[in-house]
Length: 214
Length: 269
Image (tube, rainbow over all chains, first blue to last red; front, side):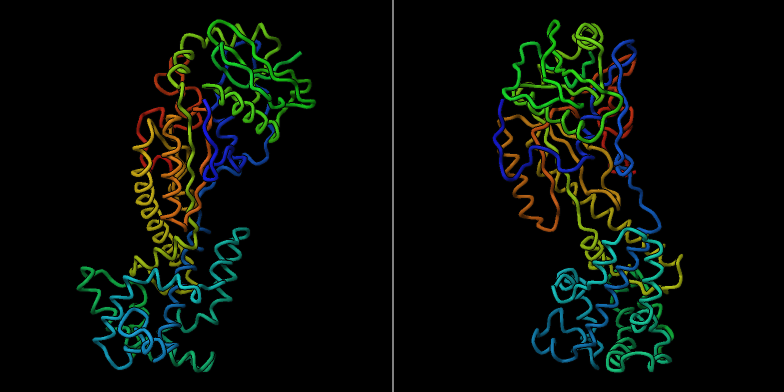
């Protein structure tokens, strides 16, 4: 009765929780007898086995989503012709083609939606902030609060598109200009295209915030 | 003299060639106490007021050492008896009728554990790519709106994990005789999959290959693959009036021994 070892498979669980699952949770309990008993178990880590999703988790997710959204918007207008000329008519050139071309913008959006995951996972596009945010689980509430406030400044362009024209003087002009010009054009494309594609499902808040745009 | 009792094997089970040390300090020497068709693995302990992490690991190592020579049933960590006679009369004899056939049925089978975790960062990015409706610009100061967005993202993460788990199970189940969940999984803070498989020893290499393929196809997932382990997930007894669920299911109502069902909602509390 021997099972060969492989590099693929571990002989023993790596974590205490897994060990306890076998020797504590799944072990046969001898009870209702006078002499055989079960002694106390001192395991400080036992309580760590129960993890419950909380508001902190949700805030973390929302933050991460917004970071990704901001990152995407930042990249689109940030590299006007460059990506467009290199990539041709594919996923990355959305902004380049979109400049002044409403119809192409729609097409760019569509293909981007499909390929977003790949695009987002491209090494250069991964924000360290998100990783830090996602891994730091210690004081989540406070951290989330701080991030929300701290992030406001550099997220201004992304989060406050509705009134960004009023804030233009507060942040990097070049960066700002890129977003400012992209948003109004994106708005109609965003609403028009996906409405037919997605059965009228609203395309999230990106449309909602831009309603105030001229 | 006090005896720590680790597990039960069949009476003809050999002693491990190099028995691991027992629990407690100093660690006692492992030996088998036989009665009828069963034998209990025990060691003497001096101080047994409480046991800690090292003892949990020692208990598991003893089970694993026994397992290499045949089926073994784990007793709950911390089970102690005052002498060999009480081990026979209170552990082995009452269990003999039910446990012996169960152990026989597990001959040549081992339990394998698979825990598949998805990186949270990657999970959110996947949702971002797949669910344009969730790409919202929420006012950073509006906590309610952020929580609401986060909840919707969490739901999407859970849905995707359920799909992932189904895919993985569809690949592995054909190679196992039985399988079932091992506690929490599928939730936003849980592994995508925490599963136990009962696999014939002859099929273990195939299972290894299937897990290797799975890892190759999903390099983004953290896959913990452990075994062979004592088939505790597939050894449920029916003491004192309980029907299918064993005493070991008391703390896990969602366990698969109770109902035979293991839906995702059950495990992801």
